[in-house]
Image (cartoon, rainbow, N blue to C red; front, side):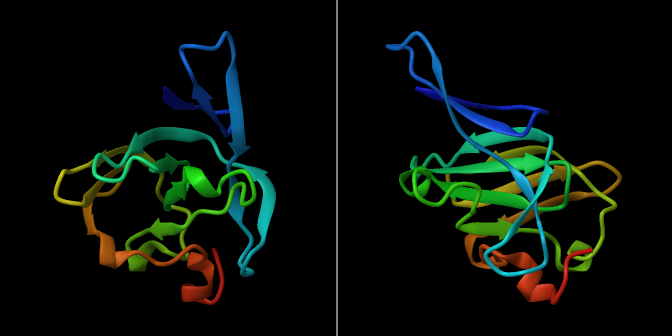
Length: 139
């Protein structure tokens, strides 16, 4: 089994025992209001699985947030991440896009971005599932 993402915003799961893929959800932007997502679809650039916790996968997309999803929660909680990561000085901006993600076996998330440096996050550095509530508004 493996996962795929693309510029159409869809996350798909492929099971090699099956003849077709399963579209899990379409990733959209945050609205600035808790528990709400907009209809603006995000182009996805990167997807990785947490090697220590394979139920979690991370998405990098055309905004500043690395999103974490729990595959066990997807049927009922589509497009709602369980955690997000973003440098705090970039929360209100739209100046960067995530171009790549990597996850270490020591539970650190490496995020590369266009026009910025590379950021290293520990698990306790997340902003929660709704980062706009941390910043009061999304930019």
